[in-house]
Amino acid sequence: MDQSDDDFFANLPATRGAAGGLIRSTSGDVLLVRRVYDPERPWGIPGGIMEADESPWPPAAVRSPRSWV
Image (cartoon, rainbow, N blue to C red; front, side, top):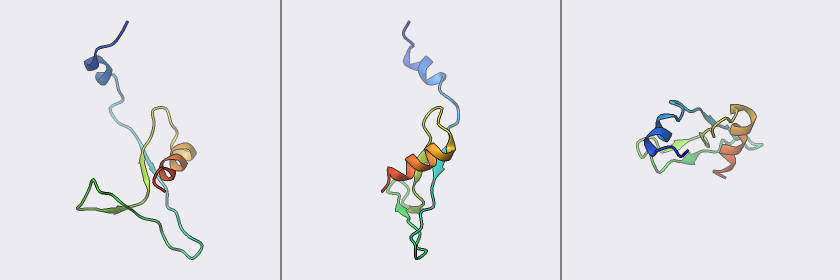
């Protein structure tokens, strides 16, 4: 039995987690990414929303920053 779009969205988790990673060079420089979607706060650490059923450490904290670099 197929779900309607309304039922599908109603059954999604109300909150999702996020993960990021602080990436430093051997000389101590910190990698920042420019967030074009938030012009008032354009700089941040690489990261993003966790996938459904994904643990924050290590899967999401490794996968998400890799997608930025």
